[in-house]
Length: 357
Image (cartoon, rainbow, N blue to C red):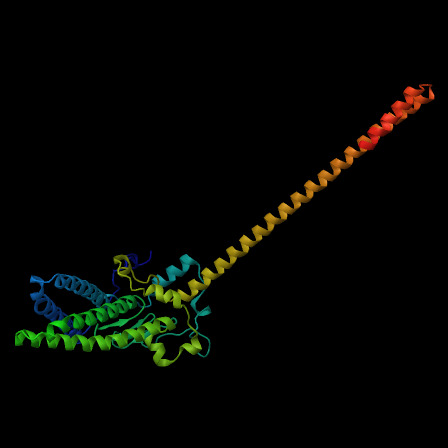
């Protein structure tokens, strides 16, 4: 049976051993996030809650963005980006009856054989790279991010994209709404210092995150990864699938969209698409053949009906002609036998009926 970890979208794969010291960037990011959260909630928003309804609205919006940011950041850290698992891949391929990988892989050795990782010895599908920090081959690897101490790959790329979205929105929302509190002259010096510190820090992060997020949006439209952009390899590989990539990375606010990840093994994405294309082409041909058969049957039915109608009309004409001939013969016999004027009238009547028919 396939691995049970793929049955639930949030179940992480087996993570490699990580050095505790390398979690320091994660702790630093968490410290910055919660520091800005505390400054905004307790220094900026708390005093405004007493006399302004605007403070409640800003507080709800900011904390909603912060909650989504925190969830996405946690998922980026704990979710395995995806690795080549030989057993589950073989089971998937046997179940779907797909052709071998090497028949469809675009990245191959010069000899034409499929690639293998020289570090872990596993088969390397297209867009798979070995991360020396995580010590594993990552499916559809985008890059290794030290700030989440994890690789961004097939299974957590969506969380990383959403993290950039919510972090950018939260940072800009924070410094824009704090600007009014900073310019007020009657604020205590200590509060003004914290507000200025929070506004400058959030504006700086907002600027950096905006540029980084715009870069990843551009990559999504190009259907590229960061590694492919750095290596300039898409010209020779010709990867496509912009629509599927945008759908996979859609930044929806729905919980169902947030809690779902890319399923499958990633090594089969192109093969599955080709199999689906062949299946669609087969169904299309069958539908066209069925349409042609129906049209031909209808034409044959109409031709048969016309033939039967012509045969019926011809038979009616023959019967009418035989009847008229019989009546004429009887009239002629009566005339010869001395019927006189009566026979002549009968003959005229018969000719009249024959003409009408």
